[in-house]
Image 1: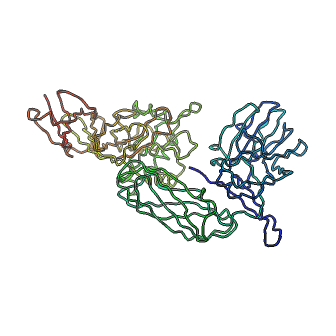
Image 2 (image 1 turned 90 degrees about the horizontal axis):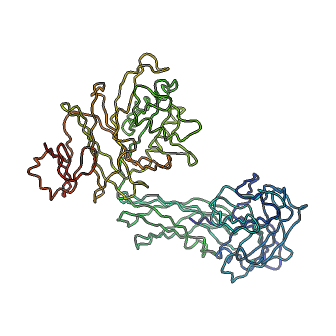
Image 3 (image 1 turned 120 degrees about the vertical axis):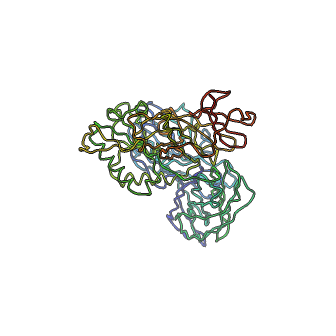
Length: 598
């Protein structure tokens, strides 16, 4: 995304000469702010060398100031120690000749803002087609990290050369250089509305039919603007959408605007939206180069009901775990959360106990803390790391309200895959047969191949010796068995549907009336714990009977294998050839049937 140049226009002086006005403004990306703390990323230990920084003004912006003059440049320094000279300059290319320059010696260099005037101001030509680099260079006799950089990345806002022989590097993605040019003249822009940013949904839902578009605009010229026309285009349709926004913005004011459209988009995939401010109520915009922003987005046919996966790490030796267990219990007293949250408890994190299964210990990977290790209690919600700077999806909720807010956040995320569960108990065989079916509404529901994990879960298990649990503590949502710690990769059918089957043995210590099966589809990145986000989840109580959805038992002798396009075992793996036992056949017509070969 191209973040537009922030222009801070300050009417510094009005000198009457007939009908002419002499105005002045500052041009830069830092908006008059500077960083006073040093940052070693923007400096060098090298002695007796030049260190330089610059911003770039695109040709369209430069054209707006044609005929006006750059009188001075002001530079922010977070540290002056070791600097013996500072130069400011204007260039057409970073390694080109200085179109104008000025310098100050050590005694005049300040920590903070340094304003350096040119002996002869540089008049901006009308025929400039390359844009201009506005920059400075400091000569350091010892190590220095004085370059002032705001933590506010913007396009064209930070070019650096850390040493006389170093290459220029665009580091605009890391911050904004604290540098501004002072421009004066009587031909400064009167009407210039800048589209600062554009926000559109990350995913457009065809079934929804509408899209809300939001942007931020700023009046970077001298006169008040009262409204503007907006043109919206998509690369996946020829239709052009016209909107009008009534919004009054005085000099230097910025504001958000939004409008709703009904795009003629009918195919899933990826699209690009382009928004352009075309005209102002006051007439033409004097710089149309900063009037357009684009965004890419995914297109899905529909979104499905989201159910949040809550994973709790707990053990009996953990003295603080009953507190979080009570929070989870209270949340499930609310019908809304009971319906929309799927819970699985892993008995690990702080030691282990008699309910710990091997996969619980595998999941300690998500703590991602070699120095301090794991802990309990801890919660994961959809394995989502809500803190952008976070290193783990785990957290310890301090209150019921905190956990509810986190769950609500996850529930607001769209789900582009459905998870439909059947869990049937075969008492004679002592097995729970599970069938998971669903479909996706866009192709890339995950970054890596989507995986499915299925648990057999048991509620209402009396504790043996829960620390701080009292005499009647009962464990809920205990993961008793799992298909695989990291799930199985889903095999998608051509129509975007999937089918997965597995079995769990019912052990003697299980209470069959308290068994539930939970399943999730998720993204698995074995190199990054923060990129294992759950796409959707669901659960179903275990009941006696046979799997019903779309499945019938058939005599293998009557099966036409030429019309059977997929064959699965009960772990959901595709198999080939005839095998004894129970298998599931997916026919060419999409119908699912069970086949038993003895």
